[in-house]
Image 1 (cartoon, rainbow, N blue to C red):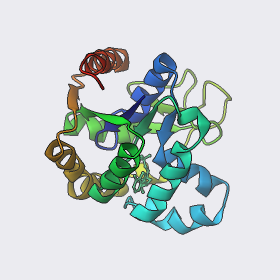
Image 2 (image 1 turned 120 degrees about the horizontal axis):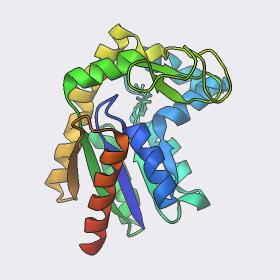
Image 3 (image 1 turned 135 degrees about the horizontal axis):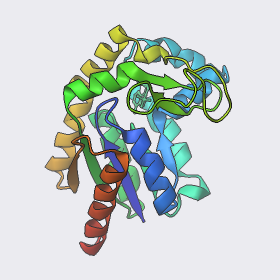
Length: 222
Ligand code: AMP
């Protein structure tokens, strides 16, 4: 039973890697960004409350996100392990998660996806999403078969509100200021942190290196 924490800046490929890992490990992919967007889309009170914060590229309050994650991790499908994408994003979230996992004897493996800053900017600016099914594309590296239309349902693709240029800067700033200390927290408590560099060889090659790191950590008893 393991908690895999995918750590990295916006645009580092956490979502893509989580989906690849989910299909090979068979454990759920838990993305706080997706959970919040889902609530926003369905117009519930939580979604409405966090809308402005998300559109500005800032972080939603720790208590709100911690509660969402705690409820999600208590679902039966997470009993054999899970992949966290976009959480924890502050030191306070990391401490909350640690307490929750410790109480259940679950160890964390942190995978730090390290990607060049210029690549990140290009990825985020080229990103498109299907508003109906959520599939992500990139106009340069992963274009849809037909211009601006989703391959799966033909819906016209959109630029996510928080992928606009000014908001991208805000999100990267939030990452530097609030999320980077999470890595220091993990190092300070001696949790395993594996750095996986994405040097442009494509998502499958990165996924293979993550799987190797997971194998190694299992041999070391986690
Ligand atoms: P993401 O799709 O992971 O980039 O998340 C999109 C947005 O959701 C972020 O810019 C934040 O506004 C919010 N968000 C997602 N995860 C968290 C988190 N762990 N803590 C606070 N805000 C979050």
